[in-house]
Image 1 (tube, one colour):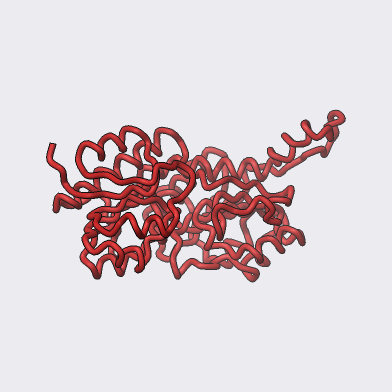
Image 2 (cartoon, helix red, strand yellow):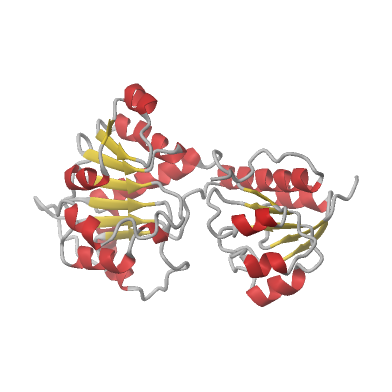
Length: 324
C-alpha cells in the first residue's frame, strides 16, 4: 500500500483509525489517551511531518504551524476548530479538516441530559443517599422543577441546536431561539419562535448554548445577560467554555440570580478540582464529554483519518473547515 506521507498524531486513537493510518503513512504519535502532548515535545516532533492529526486540546497556533515547514494538512477530531489558527494555515496553503455532523445527536443527548439532571437535582439527590441525608419521604425533599411544558431558549440554531429542538418537543417544551441569522424554514417546520437574545433570556426557564467558540462569541453570556434571566432559570453549556464569563456565572449562582447550571465545558480545561464552581450544589459539571459515545468517537476518529489522507493525496476532504 502506497505511503502518502509523514503524519504526527497528538493522541492515541481508537484502534480502527490508528490501524488505518499505520497502513497508509509514516506515523509518529504521542502514545497517551488522556494526557495532551506537551508543547515542547510537539514542536520537536513535527519538523518533518506533512500532516498533523490533533484534538481540541491541542493548540495548533502560528508557532506550531511555522515549526512544520512541510505541513500540508491539519485534521482535528472535533467539530470545533478554535484551537487551530485556520487563517494562518490557509495563508501557508495548508488544508484544515474537522468532524461536523457525526456528533450532532450524541451532543444533543448530553445537553438534554444536563438539562434534566440540573432541573431535577439528580446529582444532589444521588449524593444525599450516600451522605445519609435521606431520612424518608418529605413533601419538598430534593424537589426540582418540571421540564414538561417549560420554556426552552436555544442560543445557536446549527445542527446541534436543531437536534435540541427535536428533544424538547418530545417533552412538550415551548421553544424559542436566538441565532445570528434567522432560520425561517426551521421556524415553520418545528413551530419555534425567533427572539432577540435579551428577550429570550428574560422569558425562558432553560437556556441552552450551542455556539462555536470564536472572537464573536467570547463572553456572550456575562453579568448583564445572566442578570436578565429568571431566578428560577437554568443555564446549559455544551458549546465552548469561552462563551460564558465564568466569574459572572459563579456570582450569579452563588447569589441566586439564576437557579442552576449544567456545564460540559469550561474556560480552562481541564477545570481544577478545587474550582469554586464545583463546590456549588446547583451545578452539574461534566468533563467535556458531549460527543463521548463509543459509536460517535469511533466515527469521528475515522472521518478525521480519512480526510487527513485525502488532503495528503491532493484530493478534496469531505469536511474542510469552511471559509468565513
